[in-house]
Every structure is written in structure tokens, then in C-alpha cells.
Image (cartoon, rainbow, N blue to C red; front, side):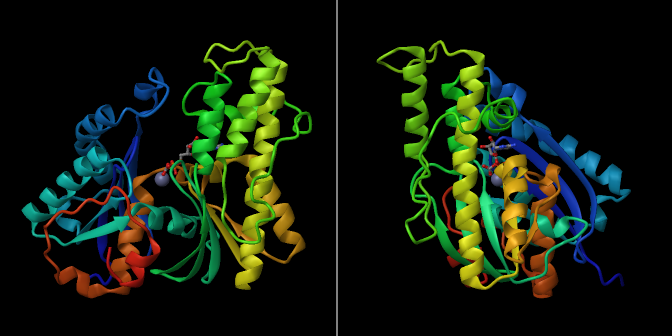
Amino acid sequence: MNPEKIVLGFESSCDETGVALCTTDGRILGQALYSQIAMHKDYGGVVPELASRDHIRRLIPLMDDTFKQAGLVMSNVDAIAVTTGPGLPGALMAGCAFAYSLAMGLNLPVIPVHHLEGHLLSPLLSATPPAFPFTALLVSGGHTQLMGVEGLGRYALLGETLDDAAGEAFDKTAKMIGLPYPGGPALAKLAEKGNPDRFKLPRPMLHSGDFMFSFSGLKTAVLTTAMKLAGVAQPSETMQISDTDKADLAASFQAAIVETLVKKALAACLQQDHKRLVVAGGVGANQLLRGQLVKTAQKRGIEVYFPELNLCTDNGAMIAFAGAMQLAKNPALLNTRSYSMLTRPRCELAPLNQNGAN
Ligand code: KG4
Ligand code: ZN
């Protein structure tokens, strides 16, 4: 019998549908991804109902592509992993209903995966994966957290944002200056042409002495500056700001948020006495953040690890991988047959995994 088991993983927590096949020794055998960006663009953000319906349309074709790529068939699968939370309730329901029904029909175990655990472990899929323990900076559209990671399933929350997540701040600020959804990459691109020193924007909670973040004040500072530049007393979506001003504002905003993330992440890593810092989540694709982290960390003898660029944002590979790692650690999961589907739109990573359950 082949000692390696094969896990089929599904991700559908927000606006990406992802499917992948991963072995319990961590090899991705096939993966397929569909991003709904084009569909949500006209609305300036994710429309949850549209997202849920689209996941339903994409799951089967993406699964077929994944099997084709891997040269495998359904009977090769040993377990099914699926994101059960956090995320949009309807979007999670779509993926979970599909994954649980499939598992039940095939008499396979289901491995529930926490979306953030997927992000957290995604750097382990890169060519030079980090060893445990490490400090992780999780920066996505919905979360900004610093975690101490001692091993698989052993996560301690060190700090998080009190209000907006880093990606959310990028997206909202981008919208304010008239950039299209998704704002993060668009703002980062515009910032390349701007002067990051032109506007002195706040670095919120930089000296708070803990690992908490707050980005809503920074967003307000951008809005106030944009109103001044446009010469208006009330904010509006049609504020007239020159292209140079927009680029300088984007660059100044990006510099402020990156400086805060870098300093807090490094401080957390040093406090934990970790030699490795791992960055994951959509904002981990930001080039300034990557560059600044590496530069600052090197001076302190800390190695920085990132997921491959295509694995920074949501994908099925990280979910199949997280499921496969859970199975490798606990082969008894193969004998479970629990099909009472429970989606968790809001759920913490640390307490769930400390109990060994999701
Ligand atoms: O991890 P992710 O795909 O979804 C969530 O789990 O939330 O992250 C998406 C977030 C969005 O807010 C997006 O604007 C941001 O990541 N993002 C970026 C960049 N690429 C994606 N933010 C800044 N710079 C980027 N290059
Ligand atoms: Zn995500």
C-alpha cells in the first residue's frame, strides 16, 4: 500500500474558488483556481450573493482540471479537506456543501480547515520552506495578525488589528482615490510612481509596546489629505485629485502601513526569540513589504520566508496542504466519518487548534 495519502482540498471562503490535490508528504499534484475579480469589479467590492452562486458554478470544472493535471481519478483520493471558516457565510456554505456531499457519497473522511491555517502554512509549499518554530505575520483582506508558530496546530496569537485589516485598509484607501477593485495591487502599482515622503501620514500604534495594530486612523488621514488636495469640505467618490497627487498619496500610505507592519513583525519575532519570520496572506504579495522586511530582518539575523506569489492570495493548494499536514500528523483522521457540516464565518485560529479540533 502507498504510505502517502492523497487529499483533495477546496477553498471558497471569499471571491476565489480553489481546488487542489496534495500528498501527505506535502507535494501538490494538481491545482486550479478561478478568481471572481472581473465579476465583482463593477460593484467596487465583493458581492456575497454573487460570490456564493459563482462558487457553485466553478467547483466541478475546477475539480476536473485538477484531476486531469494530476493524472488521477476520484478513487485515488483518501480524504477531502475544505475551508470551513472564517469567510463569507454563503461562500463557505457553497464549498462545504459540495465537499461534504462528495465525501459522504464516496465514503471519505472530511478534514475541516481554518482558512488562516491555510495561509499560515502556505510558505511551507515554497522551494525553501521555513522550519518550525517561527513568527508569522498574517496580512489578508480580513485579518492582520501576528502569530507564534511552534509547530503544526500549535499557534499562539500575539497581536492583531483593532479595526481594519491591512488588506482592507489598502482596498478602502484605493477606493477613496478612485482606483478599481481589488484596490491593494492597484494602489501598490500607483505607489511605484509616487513620492512616499510627500505626505506625513500617521504610523498608528507604532509605539504601543504591544503587537496590536489599528489602520482606520491612517485611512481617515488619507481621506482628510485627499479632501484638502481636492479643495472640498465633504468627501465624495468624485473628488478631483491630480495624478501626481494620487501617486504621492498612494506611496505615502503604503510607506506608513509597511513601516508599521515591518516594525511590529520584527519586534514580535525578537520577543519570541525566533530566527524565522513568515509572511502570508494577500498583502504578502506587496513588493515594498517584502523588500523592507528582508532588509530590516537581515540586520537582526532573522530569515524571512514568503509563499510563492501565486499562493499569497486565496487558493486551493494551501487548503489541500493544510488538510494533508493534519492527516500526516494524525492518520486516525482516515477513520472518521463525520458529515455534520458546520461552517464558521467568524472563528479564531489559535483556540480551535490548541484543542486539536477545528
Ligand atoms: O488573502 P487574500 O487573498 O484574501 C483574504 O483572505 O482576505 O487577501 C486579499 C487582500 C486584498 O485586500 C488585496 O487588496 C490585498 O490582499 N493585496 C495586496 C496586494 N495584493 C493583494 N495588498 C497590497 N499590495 C499587494 N500587492
Ligand atoms: Zn485569505
